[in-house]
Image (cartoon, rainbow, N blue to C red):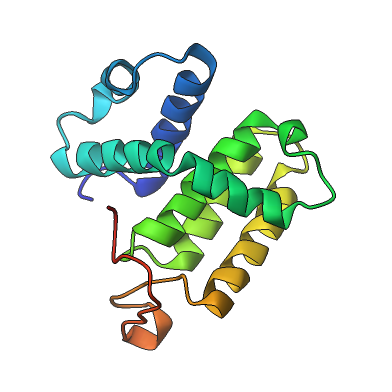
Length: 163
């Protein structure tokens, strides 16, 4: 994305997910308010909008994945921002084949440190590591492009990219 770092875009995505979660406002309204500053950068705006929609669309599936990795923890007790950041990162792992897993995971860890509790970075890191390993082992991770899996595409039975 020219002119805008993806970190800033992901910060806006977390803000939009949070606003939607606490207000239950329609996504269109949340996006209009939160992404106002991104409209001039079409690529950043489209990426952020797609990431929000896909994260919300696949929320139930992603929450099941998260729940499976925090077996000794009541899902409802996970800090809301940690939950939202995990949803966004796992959505990227599953549905954005052009984004390297390490980028999605590192960005999520940094966002957890920035927005959530003192131990959120470690928590998000642990959950994402477990999710990533599980997705690789079960063949549910599809990534392709430069810097991914030694530069060659890895197909694993998942739909390629956002659906």
